[in-house]
Amino acid sequence: MVVEEGLEYGPAKRRAVRQLGLPPRTPLPGNDEVEEAVREYIAVFCADTQPAELQALRRLALLWMERLERFRPHLSGAVWHGTATRLSDIYLQLFCEDEKSAEIELIDQGVAYEPRTVTGLHREPVEALSFHAPCRELGETIGVHLMVHDLDDLRGALLRDSKNRTPRGDLSAVRRLLSEIENR
Image (cartoon, rainbow, N blue to C red; front, top):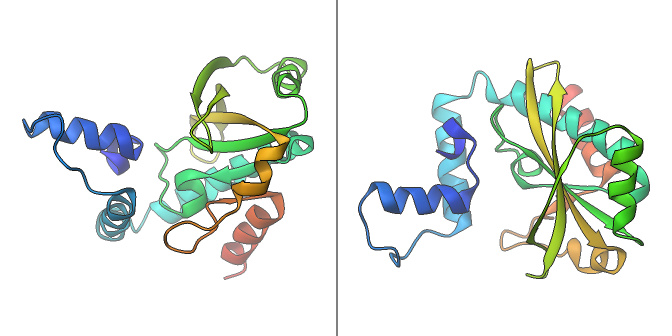
């Protein structure tokens, strides 16, 4: 479901519980286990297409990070971790002095977006601005989600995860990722 339908881990796990007819409180695998299964699936079934799709998504993310550079964008999720396919959305964390400034910037750029509230980095509600952006390389529109955080939240945003990885990358980190692959 994650690879074939582009679902995020939480919704995919909940749907699997329903499809298997298990009780709602059934213990579920952790996200690290799900990510490992996704990597295995990609290696077996998508090895010929996924690397190019991932690069296209990273280039699109970089484009939006450059357009929103003044908000200190950081790429996260499957596009950052390398498990994204053409069905994956792009998740950018923005760190703003004024949280409404990102919304004003989208309006100024003529971007039609949908605001909503989601759980942020510290399990607190944050605004998410979602829109679809064309990806010429893939010939599709891709969901882009901007999670708007307070500038102070940047301090804890780069703490390493359970696998000792940086959970998100800034503009220079994404540029490095792209250049490493393109220089192979």
